[in-house]
Image (cartoon, rainbow, N blue to C red; front, top):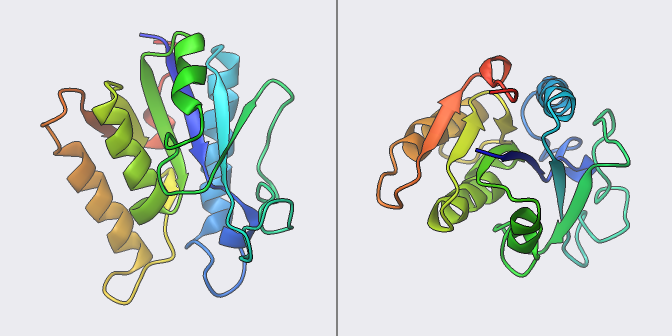
Length: 179
């Protein structure tokens, strides 16, 4: 099954300041390891960037830029979005179809918003999803710590059966792009 790696919203505004994703530098390191292995296996890498006018994620602002330390290449694809769903109004599905993609590996930021929504939409569109258990992050919220948000979503997303395709949760180091 031809796979693509989608890196969701690993942007500077989500890595610094009061609302920074928990342990963002370590998360970026794990994502860099994933993208390196994907590229080595010939798997397309797509970076999704959220934009919201008048916010720290305003298009072109420092906060909108991909995070410091995140490794990209000229062959990587970019997709802009303005909702939590990386597919909604973006042309992402058309790009994946043009590449013959049948399965996705999703990683990135914010677990409870864009990663969750994109994973559910991918399932609804028929894509099996691999979610690196340690490859997505949150800043937490008033009810749950960042660790609890990530753990909750790893469990919840892997238990969804109604779409047909499933979410498989693996440690990022265990994801084999050559298989």
